[in-house]
Image 1: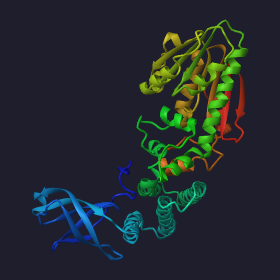
Image 2 (image 1 turned 90 degrees about the horizontal axis):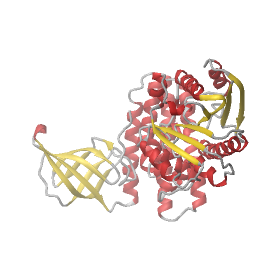
Image 3 (image 1 turned 30 degrees about the vertical axis):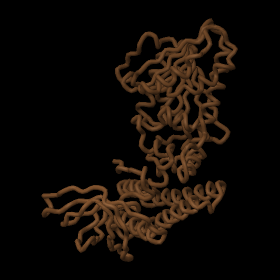
Length: 448
């Protein structure tokens, strides 16, 4: 389950604490705290104005000017009051002390419930490396704010920092083989890194999945555009995400699919062509294909997606298509479509069916059902094109997983081929192509 992450107003996460606090002779405890403010409980009523507060961190005592922003009466807790306060004019030394105390506290909670000595030892080693990683992010953020590092240096440095820590995390995952512990470590990783990583609008969307699933149409459009649009530290996490090998492969996949579509259309000996796009998303490959298409006979595209917003986006992007090209946009849940085994008549006798990215998320059983359903919809000698990421490229899925909780079903070429063979479909030919970096396979199946 995702932790609630709010990163719009602070540069470190809000973490639960029990640090003592004193204000105007009244004592209490801080319930939660970030480097910009705190929520605390006192038994004394205070006006909403500025005060000097004494906060006792484990490492040192701090004297901080705070501005009380809100208060709430808590009758259930011995007539106490809950306050929210903003820190005022913190110097760099105080900021650093707060951030390090909060990071230390969260990391300590990560290991406190691990009792097996060998596992605990390995997690402690990772926690120390992660703590240093976060300190380095703090330092990098300060350097960017003070113009003490160039854009190119910052880009290289954050790539180095990110890759180093997630590779250590991946190695820990393989060594422990403890799903519950690793799940908690990844949750805490994302929580603690959130105030830097999720200032990247791209990475934040990848984590939050606001359309309810990974890789929605807007996410793919951002990858296709390949332009950072976040500010400050967020820009560098944008770049890190966009330069991930999978992101590069996805851009190449879009271009290659466009070429494959063009070749199919312009070499087909047909009076008209029917093409079905499963889980169509933004249809970017079609939008980029049409201006250069020489084919003048009727082309009928049917684009299916369960996300109405994606369909509306695609419809608008394709509204100025050539007069011989017709589009039908259908809001359908593919899983439900294949479960009931019935397909609308308008989907029958397709000359080409393709899907890019869908089966990367499907378990074997659903993968085979999609293939079977597609073959039922194909005309004789019709073609099915399915793409699939190559699990042998072991680094590529690590950053999306650790930073964004974005996972794929791992398969290599032979495992995908076996699924086709076990789908009980009549294939006259199966051709396999791969991109230049061996990241994505293109399976081209022709129906008998």
